[in-house]
Structures are given as structure tokens and as C-alpha cells.
Image (tube, rainbow, N blue to C red; front, side, top):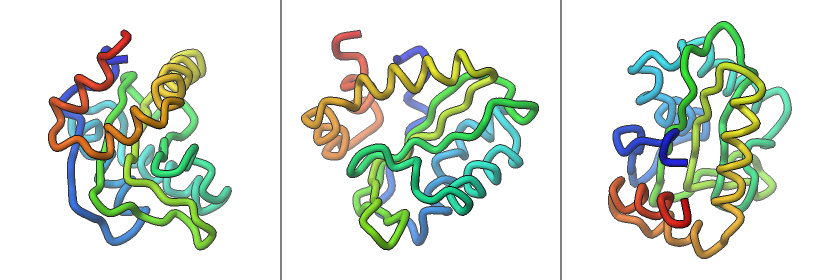
Length: 146
């Protein structure tokens, strides 16, 4: 798992103004390093507008992603951790851990999603991630049982 998420790809903020801003901010480290283009960021946001808050996979956890394609150069994962969660819809889809997944093909896409879902299936781990004070602490939580 820590092959995909790096300390420099983790952002910690108090709050954002919208879920769109959360995806843009969470994408920034990977976008800046050429993992994908701005079109990929727009595609992730458009997908939520079109299909609803499907990226919120559990309370407090969202995994923003789009189809692998021409706009993706490298496999990667970034994280925006918010002190105040953001609502993705009116009916209680909220998250304070916003992951962005970058995958070059369906196999890599599914592999990272599977690994991430396994790590995030533990509610205690989610709570520890939410309570983490810095990116090093977050990386150490992901390293457990690797």
C-alpha cells in the first residue's frame, strides 16, 4: 500500500468550501508531479455531478477516481485529510478523508482500490487516520500489517 501513497502526497487542512474543492486540492500533489492532467481532475468531479456521491464508500471516506485513460501517466494515490468533513450530498454522504486514485489501466485501478478498501475496512484504522496530526503518522498507519 505504501508503494502507492507517499508522505508528500498527503495534505492536511482544517476545511474546504465544497466537495469539488476537496477533489481539486486532494489531486494537486499528483497533478503537480505529472501523474495525470487537469482533464482527469475535471473528469472525477464531472462523474460525481453525473452519478451522485458514489465515491463516498463509507462514513468519512471518499475515493475520487475516474476511468483509466489518456489523461493518466502513472499509478498513484493522494490523500486530503480534513478536520471538518465535507458533504458530498444533501443526504449524509460526507468525508474527511478524501483519496484520489490515479491508475493507468483497469488492473492497476482495481488493485489499488482493493488494497485501499482492505485497509479502510477497519473502523479503528479510519478513526486513527482522522485523528492523525501529520502525514508521517498517516503513512505509519498504512504501513501496519503490510
